[in-house]
Image 1 (spheres, rainbow, N blue to C red):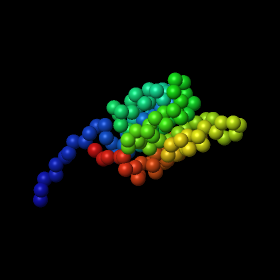
Image 2: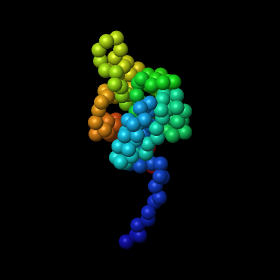
Image 3: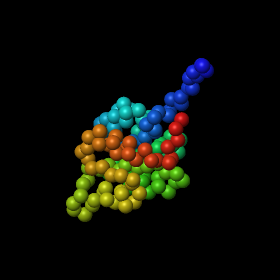
Image 4: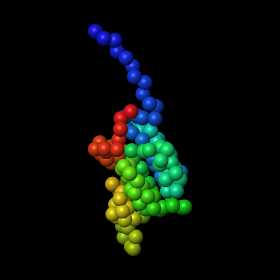
Length: 144
């Protein structure tokens, strides 16, 4: 019987994949990062769309979760730029600015390239379930 060999895993690759979280609400950003990490994802965070885009090339996430309304660069601008890249990651847009009035940010986000949208407030279990469904068939995800 052949001996079993342990193959070292890349510490930046976990079964869940890589997630980039972008939100200007530090408390929510920390909560989402904690939930994704506990679920087996490797996470990075950014406080706005501009910083998120700067992290994108070096981090190469499988999924981006972005708020819509933020300072410096809003989520809509980030989504448009991410989707222009070759082999873009999946995107979940989140926003507390719900339907009604003149602005329905989540509808805009979906129309402009977000793969899924989620209205705030939400449960972290809802976000993780949505992320899991998106990444199951994500051809960009490469196991380490």
